[in-house]
Length: 178
Image (cartoon, rainbow, N blue to C red):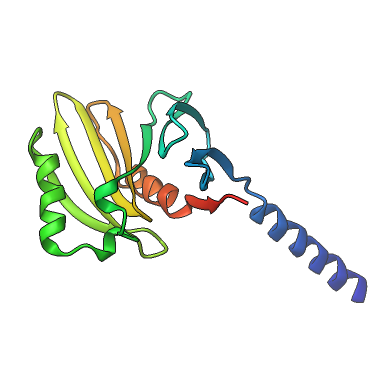
């Protein structure tokens, strides 16, 4: 009986270690101060599109399965937000000004949600000519972060795909350079 319990406990530990072993991928670095790390959704690959080493990083995240959404992460230091720790810290007037930048070019619906860690996300949705996108915008330590989720199909983006993007952002880390 004791052997059976010991084997069961070992198996449980192995399974929990395997679940924790989801490997984080480094997407790039910002100003030599931070590296951006995340766990990619199943079946997705990341490719660095642009990085200037001075606080700007752009990464495409896509699946070989063309029925899945295409994602673009853009992180850039914003001098106007230099003293802003998170989007949560902005007042309604500042949020309205940011919202207006999205409304200036497109007809959009803007709502708010949060990451699993409580960081406020502005959710900007538009659907035009069969291309639907959701643009998630937030601020972290003076960096403006946009994560755009695109899908070129008549069905549009599903709630599950939008939740996948929020999980991606919840998991993304700014890791201080050593």
